[in-house]
Length: 162
Image (tube, rainbow, N blue to C red; front, side, top):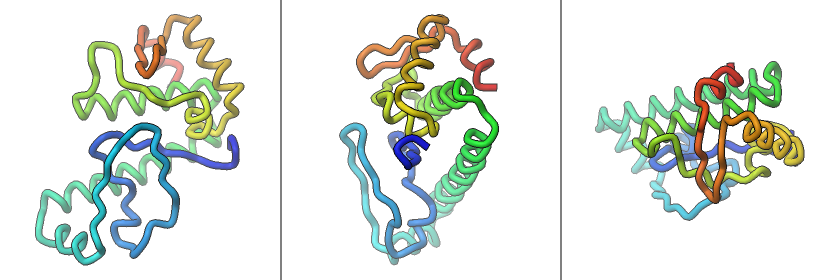
């Protein structure tokens, strides 16, 4: 993996992870790529909220399932997928998660990740990510301007991620 670490990127409204909901403390660090805020609950508050609210229970269960599915996909990404497939899948994953939250505008999303972040998330080097992003641009698949990612050929991106 690039720089000896793996990163998962949270989007607005997502739960950090399920494990810490039931453990007394978080066992990993959290870095922010953009400004954000979070809410911390003590263990008793978390357990009580989950126990009395089906809505909260459903959200926690959904977050646990999503986390498990992401872990499985990471195993496949690192063990079986090419570098092109990994980067394409990362773009599509972030896109679909933002789409569920109503945060896609036309064919663009806010995309504050830089090459080092993409490298950490895909197990590649920043230099190789730079090469791939250039190829995506040259193929007419994407445009990145500032902190905006525009997918100009979603069908091609989906084919690359398959």
